Each structure stands twice: as C-alpha cells, then as structure tokens.
Amino acid sequence: MHGENHQKKKKNQQWAKQGRAVAVLRRRLPGSPRRCASSGGLCLGTSSSFISGGERRRVAGEQPPPRGWCRAAPRSSPSHSAALRFPGRQHFQTRPGVFPSPGAALLQLPSPAMAAPKVAVVGAGVVGLSTALCVTEAFPACSLAVIADRFTPNPTSDVAAGMLIPHTTPDTAIHVQKQWFKDMFTYLFAISNSAEASEAGIHLVSGWQVFKSTPMEVLPFWSDIVLGFRPMSKAELQKFPQHRCGQAFTTLKCDCPPYLLWLEKRLKAKGVQMYTRKVANLWELHSEYNIVVNCTGIGAHQLVGDQQLFPVRGQVLKVHAPWVKHFVRDGDGLTYIYPGIHNVTLGGTREKESWNLSPDPSTTKAIFDRCCSLEPSLQRAQDIKVRVGLRPSRVCVALHREVLSQGGAKLLVVHNYGHGSGGFSMHRGTAKEAAHLVGKCIAALQGSSLRAKF
Image (tube, rainbow, N blue to C red; front, side, top):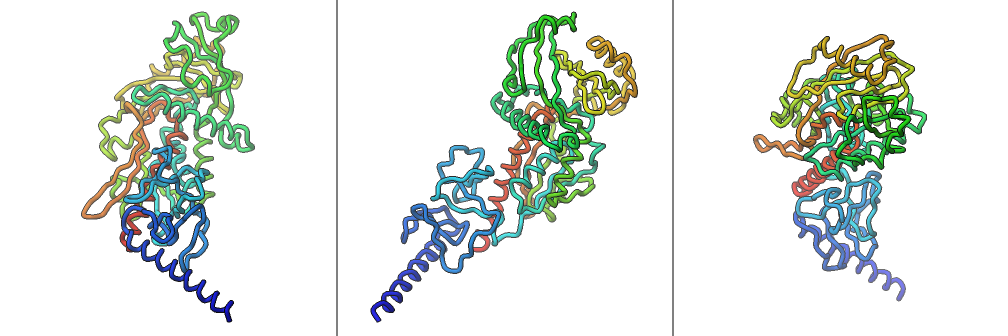
C-alpha cells in the first residue's frame, strides 16, 4: 500500500511539473525566451519542450524529434553571419555539422506548425544552380525549384572560360574574397579527385601567369590556395621573351557546359524541379513560393532595376588544339590560353557597358593574334568557334536579403548576383552564404507561423 501511494504521489508531481512548464511556455508566446520558473531551463516558442542542465525534458504528448531537426546555437554564438535571427527569440545556428552544447535548444526546419517552405531559385547559370544545390543540402525538407528562361547550353556561364584564377573585387574585403575562393577550390578539388571528374568537366591544369613589368602584388591573396605557387624560373621565362617575370602554379578548370549539366543532374536527383519560364517580376512568384532567390546575373538589371549592375562584354574563341596542355595568362588578364578537356579557350575582351552579343570579326582576329604571340603553335588550331557573353558586373557582389510587400502580403527574397569576371572562382562560396540567408528567411517564416498559432 505504501509503495502504491508513493507511485501516485510521484505521478502527481510529474503532472504538476509538466503543467507548470506548459503554462510558462504559453505565457511567453509570442516573446523572447526566459528562464522557466519551474526548472531554471529556457522556455522556447520553437517546440513544446525546455532544456535544463543539459537534459532535455519533454512535456506531455511530445513525440521524438523527426529527422531534419538541427541544433540551434546558444545566444552567445561566435559567428553572427552564421546565425538565424528568430524574431523576438534566440539566434539560431544554420551552418550544417555544427552542434553546440547540450543546453542548446532544438529548432525544426520546418516545424509541424508550418508546411515545408517553398523556395524558388531564379536563374540557371553556375551561380543559380550552385545556390540551389547549397540550399537543398542545408535544408533538405524544403520544396525547391529552379526557374529560368534559359538552361544550358544557353546561359552566360556556358561562354565562361571556367578557370579558377580570382579577379580582385575592390569593394569586397580581401579575407571575404579569399574565403569564397577557398570554398570554391576545396569543393572542385574534391570533385577532381572523384570518379565524377570527367562527367563534371573538372580537371587540374598547370601553367604560367606572365608580366611585362613587375606586378605591384608579388603574392596574390590566393597564392596559398592554388597548388605549387612559385616564381617562374629563368628557363621558363625563355618561352616568353617579351615578358619580364611570371608565376607558375596549378589550379582547376571547369568545362562549363558539362559542369552545368552535372549540377542539374545532382539537383534532379535530390528532387529539385526545373521550370523553363520567363520571370518578369519577382513578385509574380509570391503566391507560389515563400522564398525567392535571385541569381539572374545580368538579368537583374531589368528584373530588380539594379542600376549599379552593368555588362562587361566578353568575346572568346573555342579552338581545337589538343597539344596545348598548359595555361598561359598575360598579367593584365586580357590575353589568355586555357586548355580544357575538349577544346582550348582563347581570350579575350572586357568591354564595359556593351550589350552587343554579336561576334566582331576584327576582335576575333586580334584575340587569335595575341594568343599566337604567347603560343605560336596555335596557328595550327582548327575548328575555331566564336562565343560572346555579358559578365554581370558591379562594384561588389549583391548578396543580401530583402522583403517585398504588397497589400499586406510579403515575399522573402535573397539576392546573389553581380559576380563579374569572377563567377567561376567564387560561385560556391557565395552560394553557401546565400544558403545561410535562406536559412534566416526560413527562421523568420517559422517565427511568423508560431505567432499566428498562439
């Protein structure tokens, strides 16, 4: 009898404690977290649970957390750029693979209170497809679609040489550019060492960057990321008698059409939908999607009216010259020879504010002559094709969030465009940052859903 009374008393105590926890939780929604009066833990609006002393205690009726939950960083998260700002609540960590202390709260993306967020990435160039891949990797529960009026082989990215040699952006901090390039190089280097390298069109290539005068920057910021960076030897410089000095290193090259097709294949395997559609205004997507990511490149000039965005026309030649194995780049970046798996890219031009997509025969001849001066054997090149593209350029990459609103309705937007000549050198890095911003948007939706529910 004594044992039976003891068990009843224990159950009553548990029910009372659970009741107090639920009462405190309901009093605090909506609002910021505070210490729970009954336990000293944090009462949160993100789930029907609280945590105290590293132990997760569930209130009545709570089910085990489903797959897709991620741990949220405590309020003192060291990286503000990696945190999700939950309106009126904690700042939640979004970087995959980061698991803080046991006292951290649990954040579900999405929660049972809200259907899986619908995200649309507008643009199917290298930036758009990479951003879509980073979003679906970070938030697999999201319903994701890629929308573009042109898929490969038509986007500007197909014209790009795809060489991983960064172009410095004056209005972006060097350490940021270096991190973007490092993310890019690390990602592609892993692919180059895999069985998918050939299908993805990614390979290592060695060569030289030569200068007619000593460069102001002896060691570029990316010199410790590429492989084997060193000054050219006197013997090597004999190959380029018109140049005074140079740098030798090994880097990565993407053959652009295969790489874009490989990205599309990976996205489709993850259930991402591809839609061929002309988007005239981002707002037209607000009834179909919760979040829109703008990766439209030069198209953003008209789509969002960005007057800071301007075209830099690039004309290149694609030639058949399989004997050319090493890249050569003149220090000013206007003349280059980049060997790929199937052809060699000869360049190039940088014509600011030119929207002309028609090949210019005189420019074709000038490019070919300049490249032949660096590599005379190119005079025997065959099957010469001329390609023209418009680099989406601005003083710095547009990488930020925006909220569009109309008649009480809202659309969360993330922008990621304006990479100029450096799209291939940093697209994975900016795509990861864009995915972090999408995570912040998801948290904002989560907060809105909870406030509406309570």
